[in-house]
Image (cartoon, rainbow, N blue to C red; front, side):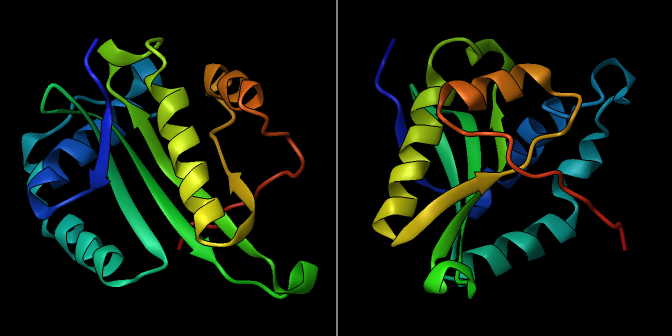
Length: 155
């Protein structure tokens, strides 16, 4: 297998990132087919532009053989707890289905953790849908611990 490279996403990557995210939906078989128009929804470009403009956020793609095979969003969050310790937040972690089990996920998350360390973070956190049991085992193998229950409120 060829070397994996990581880079900040560019606008031309948006449709691929959205597709990866959709394919990784935790609902699995209950997920309706992706409407191709979804990939070009202007709200994704607006979100991309906002992420790209903020130095505390990075939207990353992983490439192999010139193809995007994974994506991850990294956010650096300043905070008051623990003497102002900055936290790294990993979100939208998705690997293309045909690349799962290849070590790509481990390499990508390890790479993201190192970026958090370089940014001065003292902790890296993430959430994972309760239905994604394989993902939970994956994160535990990387040293993450289930320490909190999360709550969401859709607005």
